[in-house]
Each structure stands twice: as structure tokens, then as C-alpha cells.
Length: 143
Image (tube, rainbow, N blue to C red; front, side, top):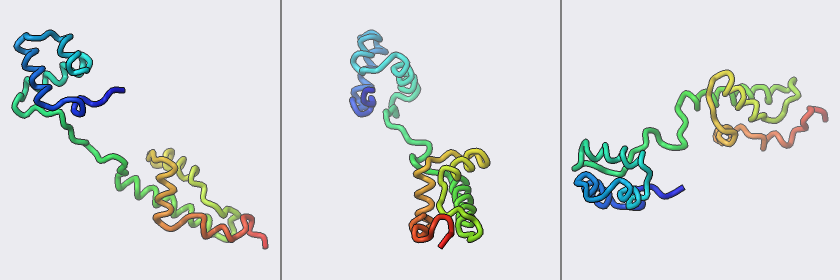
């Protein structure tokens, strides 16, 4: 995969190629070769350039920040981790360790929230509910 157009060329260089193409100094194939892009991207950018040549830019803004989970999903993760904590802390129950994969499945099936397993583990550590304190206790509850 090649580099982005905005990393290869300045805006002025791209504008100059568009101006030369629109004034018919160069053909489409030459413009594509100069910018090292395909036809579809070329005409998409050309359309933007034709609409507002003075404010044309190659920069873009993200619609949502990367690696960000919405508040509802965070609440559901916390809710399911608290349920799992209650199960583990119950002395009558033989379960002594967190099953993060199960929490992930419940989030996907019940709440329609898709998150990675490391995300769930990180949230559990942040809440202070990991298996570290549980390691001293035997798994079956026998003495």
C-alpha cells in the first residue's frame, strides 16, 4: 500500500496538476502518473477542487477519535464485570477466576457491544478486580 497523497505532495503541487489538467495541458494518464493515484481518487479530488479551488485541502478530520469506546459500551462492560465479581466473591460458588471471554460473549450477544478481550481486561484492572488477589485462594474452596 502506498503513502497518502497528502504525505507525498504539497497542496500547491496537487492544485497545479489539477489546473494543468483543467486547462488541457496534460492528459488524465499524465496527471495520474504525476500524482501516483488511481482514476477514482483523482476524479474525487478533482470534484472537490472544482467546487472550491481556493479552499481545497488534502487534510481531513476524523469523525470519531480512534480507540475510543462510547459511554454506553463502557457502562455495559462495567456492569458485566461487576456481575462476574459477585459470582467470584460468593463463597458457595466454586468459580474463583474471571472468565473474560465469557464476559465478551455476553456483551456481544446480550448488549450488542463489540470490544476486544484486552479492552475488557484493561477495564477490569482499572476497576481493581483482577485475579491477582484471588491467587492465594484455592480454586475449589477446599483447605
